[in-house]
Picture 1: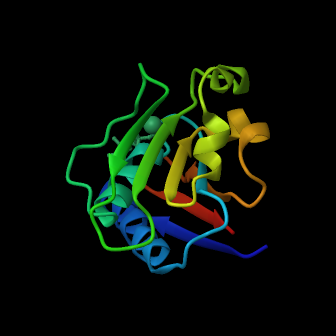
Picture 2 (picture 1 turned 60 degrees about the horizontal axis):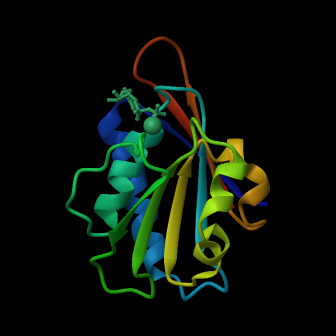
Length: 151
Ligand SMILES: Nc1ncnc2c1ncn2[C@@H]1O[C@H](COP(=O)(O)OP(=O)(O)O)[C@@H](O)[C@H]1O
Ligand SMILES: [Mg+2]
């Protein structure tokens, strides 16, 4: 397992890391399964901020907010690549069984989806084995956050 650690000093820097990761992912060839990214870390640690930069890196112009009252939101990826849809999930209030009522498995098999799950640790057992994990931590009392990316 490879891992990378980045320390950011404000929200803008965290957005930038998201933006850069999206650009790297778009360069990749088609995956066998959907590409799934699990974001983990306490409230306010920067998961949604990261997601905003990530979506921007996929060419998505709409403002990204946590899909608190719906299970997920689907956006069209507007940059040329093998990927077509970006799916944003926030599992904060959810359990794995909440995902049984619709075609979650087929979402996970659709090769041209990129799915990002905030609080992915809460539904770990329904995420594909090869999911990318990104862990967010507050460092000190100010704006510093540690971002650890595992692949
Ligand atoms: N280095 C940083 N990285 C990310 N967010 C930061 C940072 N410093 C301050 N912030 C602020 O902290 C808050 C993080 O909130 P959010 O991204 O919604 O967290 P989460 O989705 O993990 O609950 C935002 O208001 C953001 O502006
Ligand atoms: Mg959030």
